[in-house]
Image (cartoon, rainbow, N blue to C red; front, side):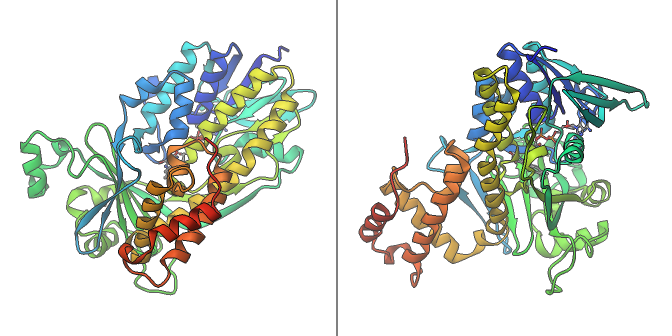
Length: 473
Ligand SMILES: Cc1cc2nc3c(=O)[nH]c(=O)nc-3n(C[C@H](O)[C@H](O)[C@H](O)COP(=O)(O)OP(=O)(O)OC[C@H]3O[C@@H](n4cnc5c(N)ncnc54)[C@H](O)[C@@H]3O)c2cc1C
C-alpha cells in the first residue's frame, strides 16, 4: 500500500476539486462516483442548477488553474435585485464596485470542468460506483455497487468522503465510532422553477417588455447581473442567471403551516394550481416570466434543507469527511460549495506538508476547519431571515447604509460581514465574531434614528476605533 494512494468517494464539486489539487501535487488519486460519467450520460443534477461562486471558491479554482475555464461559464451578479410587493425593484449592491461581486455558475458545467481538470492532472475516476459500506481494519475496504447490481471492492490505507450531505462513508464511519452526528432540519424546503431565455419563451405568452428586449437582441428576460429576490416575510423566491439567458428560480417556503393562515407552506401549496394562486398573490411580477410554472412545479421535487453538525470528522488515520459530507449547511449565504472548496485547498496543502501521516493531516484539518464550518453554518441560517424578511425592513436598510458609510470611512476596521464572508478569505469564525461586534455597534448607533443624516458620523467613527481592532492585512 502506497501512502500516496488517495481514495476519494464522490466526484461532486468538492471531490473533483480535491482530486485535481492532489493529482497536480503528484499524489496518485482514485475517485469513485455513484453517478454515470456526466461527459457521457449528461449531468444529472438533482438540486440547484446554478450556484453563486464567491472569493473563497474562486481561490480554490485559481489554485487548480481553473479560473479562466470557469469564468467563461459565469454570469456576474452585482447585488440583490429586490422585487417589492408593489412591483418596484431596487438593486442593493453587494460590494463597493464591480471588484466585489459574486458569480452565477452552472453546477453541471462546473462539475464536469473539474472532473476534466482532475483527469488531465492524472486522477483516475470510476463512475457508476455507489459506496454501500466500508470495513475498517488496518486500512479500509470500500464496498461499491453498480447500477446493474455488480459489486466491487477497493482497498486502501484510508478514504476521504466527499459524498455529500447523505454520505455513505459517514454512515460507515459512524458505525465504527460514533461521530456525534446531529441533523437539524430547517423546517423550510425549496422548489426549482425556470424563467426561460427570451429566445425560448413561447410566442403566445411572452410579456410585452420581454418581447421588446428580444427584438433588441437581448437574451435575458430580467436584469442578468443580479441575484433577484422576492422577499415576503417568512418565505421568498430567488432567481439566479444562467449563461445562456435563462434564470433558475427557487421558491423557499415553510414545510408546514404556521400560526398565520396567510403564510403559505408546501403542505398547502401542494399542487400546480395552488402554486399559480400563490404567484398571482405574492409574486405577480414573476408569474408572467415563468410560462411553465405548473409543469415545473409538478415535475420538480421539494428539496430538503438542513444543517449537519458532527463532533468528529475523521476516524483516526483511516477516514476523513470533507465538504457537505462533514458540514452540510442551508444555502442562504451561497457558501456551501465555497466552504467545501476551502476544505479542498486546506487538505491538499496539509497532505503536501505531511504526505506520510494521514492521522496528523486529518486531525489538523478538522482542528482548522471545524470552527469555520460551524461559523458559516450559523451565518447561513441567519442570512435566511435577512433575505426573506429584512431586505424589506427600513431599520435593516438604515443599518446597512450606516455599515457602508463606516466601511468607507474605516476600511481597515469595519468590513460588512457579508463582504468578509463573500469577498475575502478571512476565516469564517473571525468574520462571524467581528460581524457580531459590528452589528451590536450598528444597532446602538441607529437606535432612535430613521435617516442616515441624523447620525453623527464622527462620533460613530470614534466608536469604531474604540471597539473594533484593525483587521490583519
Ligand atoms: C438549493 C441549494 C442551493 C445552493 N446554492 C449554493 C450557492 O449558491 N453557493 C454555494 O457555494 N453553495 C450552494 N449550495 C451548496 C452546495 O450545493 C454544496 O455545498 C456542494 O454541492 C457540496 O459539494 P460536495 O462535493 O461536498 O457534495 P455534492 O455536491 O453533494 O457531491 C457529492 C457527490 O458524491 C456522490 N455520491 C453520493 N453518495 C455516494 C455514494 N454512496 N457513493 C459514491 N458517490 C456518492 C454524488 O453523486 C455527488 O457527485 C446550494 C445547495 C442547495 C441545496
